[in-house]
Image (cartoon, rainbow, N blue to C red; front, side, top):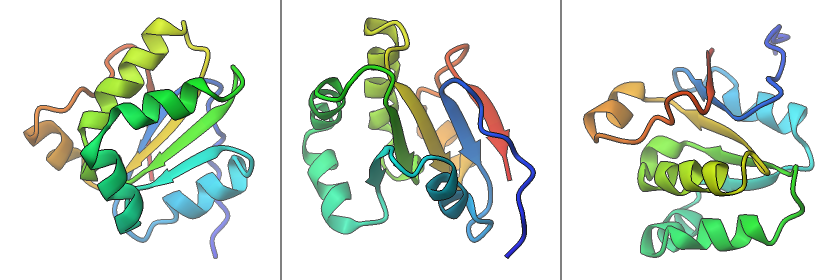
Length: 123
């Protein structure tokens, strides 16, 4: 295992990079108490696909200042609209760490890449 020199940002960020580079592992180490949504898990993916608003309801039930990790967000780009709305409505009351392995897929789908709301990092 390689040690990562990337320091976690103090605000919402989008971490992109090829599969197998350790994004999920790094997030687990950096944010062990974060609320997690792993879109590689079929049950989680289907639950949020059916109703992306679930994300908002569950996040709003958390204490303000909580980190929320959404892993493999390119699998469900509609969640980026919910994240954008949560950031705007709560004035940054929640912090998001979003990962994806395909920036191209996000851009091609017309996904909301949260301009001016996130810091972009890559592995």
